[in-house]
Picture 1 (cartoon, rainbow, N blue to C red):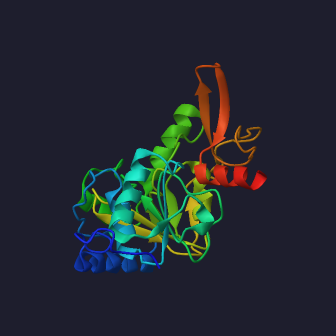
Picture 2 (picture 1 turned 135 degrees about the vertical axis):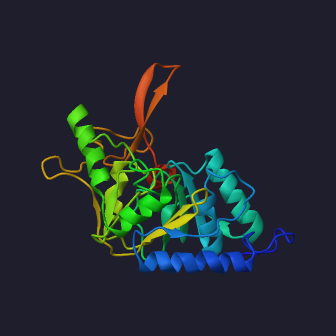
Length: 284
């Protein structure tokens, strides 16, 4: 069991026990009503709002001494955001961390879902900058809540239609809206369209936290999640056919396109750095 006395000046997992209980109650409500945005009292953390405070508050509220944490930012375990969040979690809990998805029990992410299939004993926490799919329709919270209550999502459908009329195809590169259990339309966080299908009928629990907007929502295991699309313009993910990771040789995954200015070379690399490293380790 991990030593949780690394920093005796802070409570375990930084937040006080009352705050963690309140956040866990909000999580339970979110799980009970898939896709529904549950308001919560977002706490102050020693990182700026907009840098993952919503996801971090969820992680700190559910983490236990025996958990293993993985933190990624746009697929990378080594970005500034991921490293900073991981350091705070370790400094106030002493828990173990990992770069490998299969070893983690709690995974916090910004803008990506890992390539490996997640299990039913894992929890995926996603950081969300804008949880409201109707924000493009109306800036008023009271109006958007009424539209959700009435399941009035024609404004979202209109936005998708305008993209098709103007460009001939759906133009959402990320954060493509999804329908959860046939009821609420939800922002899946700014994950690429490539990751949207992973939400459908998943074995793991997905939790979404927006600290600045003070909202928590969830997709429980084995829940129907359908990306919005017209019948004659069906939903499609990014085309990765013919692409191969230069480092590990992977195909059929989401890639980062890299340009090496020294060699004037364009090449592709796995966006999920932990997945890529694991493949290289297994080969060697």
